[in-house]
Amino acid sequence: MKSNQIRLKDMRAIARYETTYKALIDANQTDGRELQILGRYFYTLEDLGIALRNIRAADPVAADFQTYWIQPIRDGATHFSRDCLAGGPASDAPEDKLFRKTWTMLADIPADRPGAHLSDVGAMPKIDAAIAEIEAFLRRD
Image (cartoon, rainbow, N blue to C red; front, side, top):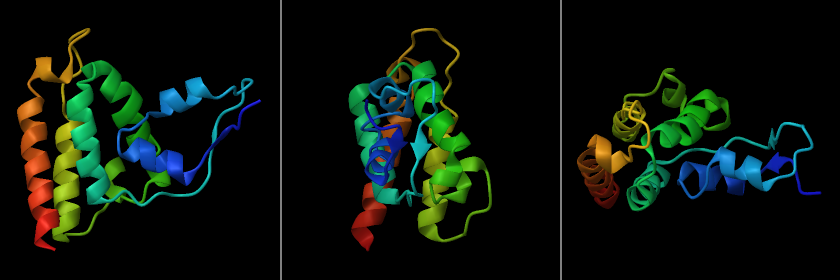
């Protein structure tokens, strides 16, 4: 029997769009039990930049992207140390503002066209712009 636990390394992989909650659930034999999330992961701007590159490379179906990545992170925001993921308060620090702006852009990608990939709904230019903005921000430090 496999573990029913999601560890911090799994949370990091989720944050970076290297996997999704659904993939972890599918990979674990849960015997009807829910997965237990161990710990809280601080979602960095660097993680989000890596996620954008991985999202761009994967070009997922928009509905799946929203259902299996955006929504679980937003709904499980207590497991990620970024209050802005769940629409909560966030600081006015430049990094937080950029994170919030990028997250909002991703959450607003339309998912109402069955089978449409992110590239089909016009998301790639926004993702490219966000990658460039995050990379420029991270280089300045």
